[in-house]
Structures are given as structure tokens and as C-alpha cells.
Length: 64
Image (cartoon, rainbow, N blue to C red; front, side):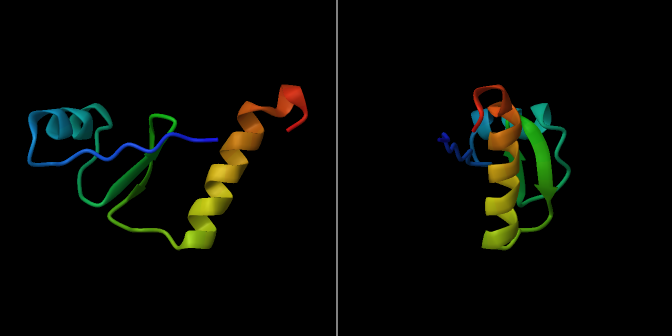
């Protein structure tokens, strides 16, 4: 259903990704390449609901 990637801010790749997302602070969470949470870690229910909402939106043409 999903692929999870974590970037280490102590690496060039991590810093580059942080800049690509235009994040300003840590922690930051992006979903589908879009910065969704910045400076907070959402609760499990909130994060799960957002992931499910995005999944349904992306797959609505298949009746997911």
C-alpha cells in the first residue's frame, strides 16, 4: 500500500530532500512528495486517516 523512506539530515541526500520539500524545521513528514506535517509528529490516528484519505483519493477510479 505504501513505501516509507527516511532521510538522515546528517547526509547530503537528506539535506537535499529537505530543501526539495521546502521544509523549514524538523520533524517534517511528506506524503506523496507533499510536505504535510512540519514541526510536529501527528498522532497515529491522524496520520493513518491522512494516509487512508490520500490512498482513496488516488485510487477512486478503481473503486478503492
